[in-house]
Amino acid sequence: PLYQEGYNLFAKKDYAGALKAFQEYDKLFPKGKWIGQAYFWIGECYFNKKNYEEAILSYQKLIEFPNFHPLKPAALFKQALAFKALGDTEAYQILLKKLIQNYPYSKEAIEAKKLLKLK
Image 1: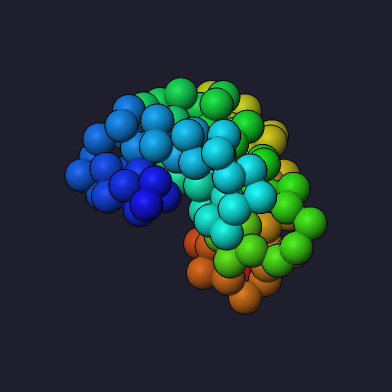
Image 2: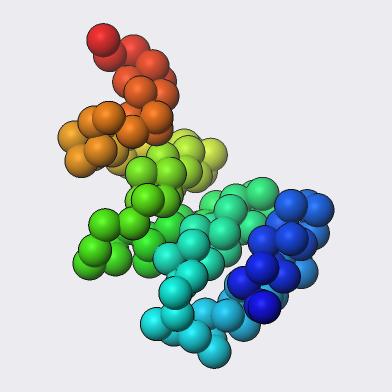
């Protein structure tokens, strides 16, 4: 299946190939079972290619999902890191605080607290 193909390509660090597969999945199955994960991995492909603006937009699609999704904390965390990579430390800090507030028990929140030097 297309999603699995994208994931396998990502695992091999073929970010361009993985991106193509996940975008195709998005186009063919916009309400598919794996669409949240696809948005996350599209973001990861862009992040690894240092295309931080596109990564931020893709993570945002997952963050805006109406229901709970297990990758939302990771998407928020990576979105914060992408803003930092672009030199926007204010957005970086705001997103880390939002992550801690919304997902206080996630491993990403624990990491965010360390980055913000909070106890």
